[in-house]
Structures are given as C-alpha cells and as structure tokens.
Amino acid sequence: MFAPHLSSTTAACLVVLACLSNPASADEATPGGGTISGTITYKADSTRPWRYSRYFIRNSKTGELSETVVALRNRALRGTPRSGKPITAEIDQQFFQFTPQTVAIQAGDSIRFLNSDATTHNVRANSPIATFNENMSPEFDYTHRFDRAGGIATPVQLGCVFHGGMQAWIFVFDHPYFAVTTENGQYSFENVPPGKYRLDVYHPLGRLRTSKSIEVTAGRKSVESFTLSPSDLVK
Ligand SMILES: [Cu+2]
Image 1 (spheres, rainbow, N blue to C red):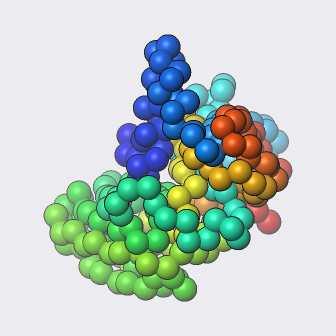
Image 2 (cartoon, rainbow, N blue to C red; image 1 turned 60 degrees about the vertical axis):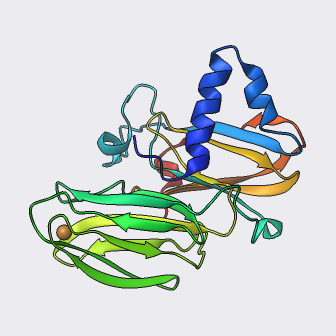
C-alpha cells in the first residue's frame, strides 16, 4: 500500500506497536500535543447507490473507506513546519488510471509522476496552486514540487489529455496535520497543538464531504470516526 505522507506510515506503525502491548511507544509520540485518530466508513443506501463503492471499499459489510482526505483546519496552524525533510510521493499511471488517485502533501513536498503503461500518457494541472502539462511516454517520469498550499478546499485536479477518464487529486497543506485514509479507512495525527479545530473529511472522486468541530487537549488521545453516506454527497 502506497503511503503518500510519512506521518500516516508512522501512525500505522504506532498502532501496530500499541497492539503489540508496547503502549509506551505510542505515548512518547504525544509529549505536549494531542493525538487524533479514527476510521472513515461508508454506509450504503440501496435506494441511492454510490458507484465508487467497489473501488474504495474492500469490505462492503463494514465499509471502511480508502483514499479519503482528513485534515485539521485552523488559522493558527498556517505555516506549521514539518517534523522531517520534504518528501517525494509517487503517482503512477497504470491500466489507464492514476494510482493512487488521491494524495496529500505539505507545501514544499514533491510528486514524482510515473508511467507503467505501454502507451503515452500525460499529466496536466491547471490550478491556482500549480500549472503543468507534460507528456509521459512509457517509462518517462516527471517530478513537480508544490510550493503553494490550497488546503482541502482547493486541490490540484490532475488529468491526462489523451484519456479523459483519468483523474487524480493532489491536496497541498500549509501544516502537517492531514492524512489520506488507508485501505482500512484509518487516519491519525500526532503532536497536535491543543486548541479548537475544524476536522474536515473529503473523498474527492466520490464527492463525499463532511466536517465537525473538535477540541484537542494536551497529552490526550481522542478518536474521531465518521460514517459517510449518500447524504454527504456534495450537491
Ligand atoms: Cu493517459
């Protein structure tokens, strides 16, 4: 499973460690801030079918939803530095699809675009925060650094000029408190400064969106899970 953001990988490791009766490791991650984690699930409605279920939900009974962007919002977070070095995430073009289709990064991070198909693709973006248009012959790769943030409201929408059905979204944040849910629908933020925030949840391809207000307390772990349904479809 591709993990576009280092903290979600770290978070997954911490969850595993905690399950292996080593809670000290998880506690050490929250010296002054709080931890927020949760699971995003989708609850189907037979009268309003959602066509993306089969792509993003592995278990239709439990409904854990992958490739959902979860992020904190609060003006005070603006410009919060990253904990490590800038990363380069990857988006491949394979079987005439961008893979993954949803990536979240912090301003200053890069995306390396790849082409694993035997045909020529293209990566094109025309957004207030990034503009590029590169033809991608087989095995060609192209790296773009994203210096401007658009948050959850203004993602970079990616297309291929040769294949109109190819779509992907790149979310660029100006702070490190964001994640894209794993195949198990999970996300986690650590070392969150105490305060009040909006917690935004958005599945761009499926056009599902919700949010809630939360308060983060120092040293405390809170679980914020969401169940999305057709009622959350963006009109
Ligand atoms: Cu293409």
